[in-house]
Amino acid sequence: MLRREFAELPLHTGKAPQWLFQRMKKLSREIILLFYMENKIDDLIKKISDPFWFQALGCILGFDWHSSGLTTTTGSALKEALREIPDDIGLYIVGGKGKTALNTPKEIIKISEKSSIDPNKWIFISRIVARVDNNAIQDGYQLYTHLLVFTKNDKWCVIQQGMNEKNHYARRYHWLGDEIKSFVEDPHKGIISERFENYVLNLVSKESKKAQETITYLFHEKPEDITRLWEKVSLRLPPYHPITAREIKPENLKTVLLKNYENPPKDFQDLMLREGVGAKTLRALALISELVYGNPASIKDPARFSFAHGGKDGHPYPVDKRNYDKSIEILEKAIKNAKLGRREEIDTLKKLSFFFKI
Image (cartoon, rainbow, N blue to C red; front, side):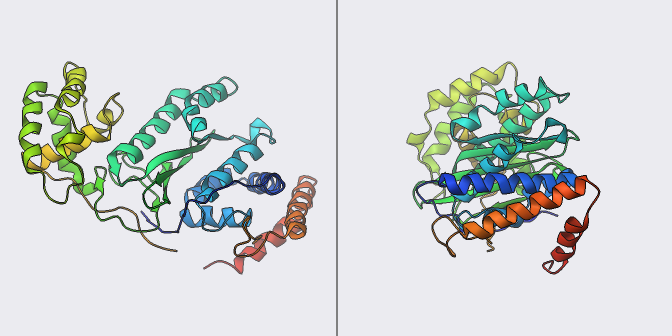
């Protein structure tokens, strides 16, 4: 079932101090190993894809409970922790923040050279989810974090985060492979944000299906005809539309259309992966779809409202280093004893979890 949740993600400055990040990495390692010992690596994918669970994990690791940095630092801690675990665990994490995200395809290829995974499959997934959240959902949040987590059993999830420089908040996008029937029709596990935006062009809403078909059809028509349509449409933009005719230059639109005219996209998903088909092109064609063909796209914001060891800025209280190290020690001991056939500690932890289930 599709869930859309909320948590405040204000953009805080600074980064995790080394004394904290090293502990975050160690605790992350023990948590991953605990899932592995229980033969539940696939379940870990489901947990990470859940907005509430991921937020709780970030709090347990001791980062700011409501900070945008929780996303990037928790992801980084998980990725770094995995480097200290043997490859045969069958869990892989690629991507990250900023330039690291751009190296995701290279990381996937590097992993494929050591294992039997198909790099093309994972590169495709990485690309399509990024295109959807950056271009097909135009909510004012520019992606700067992209994290792909997958297993040797083809289970996967993606966590992405975008930044809105005007309101100084972030928005997080969660994907779970097992729940996706289509990459271009309500594909998210959850989208969490600080607030609803008044206008969001959501081309992957189920309500936008007709608009998708029309936009794809437009790439089969003569570019000069579509350019003329845009020039007519731009003179009567609806008042709710947050772009002006000056933002989309007819010559640029025509260039993109020409580039794809002889080999037009077969469907909207194919269109999303075409080079040069960015947010502005999609906005222009969405307007043509609405005003000329009568097939409007959804303009409803897909986000929803909702919303241990302390936090790095002292909220809700300072990190208790002694208790943090004790938590790591308890997990390390439990995992070590379980490997020797003594499962008392792990069984006790499982029983404790029942007290906190809703």
